[in-house]
Amino acid sequence: MNFCETKSSNHLEYSQLLEEFLLGCKTTRKIGMEYERIPVVKKTGEVACYYGDWGVCEFLREVAKEDNWDYILDDVNIIGLKKLHDTITLEPGCQVELSVEPQKLIRDIKKRIEEIDSVFTPILDKFGIKLINKGVSPKTTYKNIQLLPKRRYGIMANYLWGILSDVMMRETAGIQVGIDFSSEQDAMKKFRIANLMMPFMTAMFANSNIRGGVDTGYKSFRALAWLNTDNERCGFATKFQDGMSFKDYVDKLLDTPMIFINRDNTTLSLNGRLTFKQFMKEGYEGFEADIEDWKLHSNLYFPEVRLRNFIEIRNHDCVGNGLEYSIPAVYKGIMYNPSALDEVDKILSKYSYNEINELRYNVARYATGAKIRKHSILDICKEIVQISDKSLKFEGEDEDKFLDPLKEMLKKNKIPCNM
Image 1 (cartoon, helix red, strand yellow):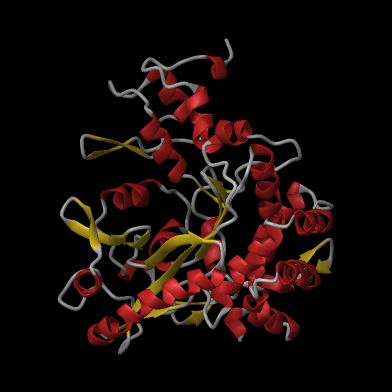
Image 2: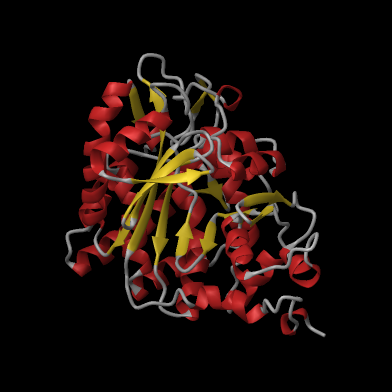
């Protein structure tokens, strides 16, 4: 019998796994943005510690007190704050991530981030901390960055087997963008093209050449770290071929090893002993798979482009000076305009999966100086931005202005780490 037609012993069905993605279909055209920054001590440039009177935990307490945020707790530890649809969370190395409510207009995202930053600024000054817009910690390496006291992070640190997984967890910061989809067909077209775009976007926003106080020889050491974290759950989720469906993504997730499950406020390590498919069929030590396990497993999968109830596009270094808003602007101009989407598709679909995959490795080192078929990708990057710019201008919402810093940078043949 085909696995897709079977049930696990607790009746979790394959159709329920698909349903989680089908429920994401919506008519809205909003942009989501997750914005990670690295907290460093102003006097030393070292990454700020979670603990202590002037640590990141106490910083969060002050923000909550000053601006009426609620705590997000793991056991008794403060690991973030929430207010309505906005969250402030901490990544494993204390990177501070803002996730604001998705908006139709990028200027509304910018406004909300600036409002939150206006609360942050005097408190950060008091604590002698600043949040820096870099893709990797420029001075402190992971051996001197304590892991955040969140139970899942300890399990993940022990499980992720890549040689740079500790760098990824503790040292890096990025910007992620969320895109809505209206149907399965719409989702998979956007998913495929976002994957094709990913190396070019990584190249344009490369901003992590300095690590441990020295030039690494890579323009995006953060991208390199992700390439060496866990090949079973990072990289490209599928070969993003034409005719893909949610089923292709679900099948990939089913064959991915599990890291842990949660039961009765306890986190139980599975350490890759079985895939989700095996868990559905056989259970684990008396526990049976349920839909919450599936949601957790989906969130512990870290491809370049991740499918959720929206499309999450992940591999951009953290940048500043207005470029942080250029990232969502590029996607807004392309993903919500069918003609722009087709134009980008025509430019990029000529390249094979293997060529795009190989480019991921080259852009980590050379950024826009990388080559595909012996040609520099800089001109392709400019074409992508030009298509988005034309689309945003056509919309008439004055959102094309967010591409100005990016266009000026590319005109000078620059990237963020050498501006």
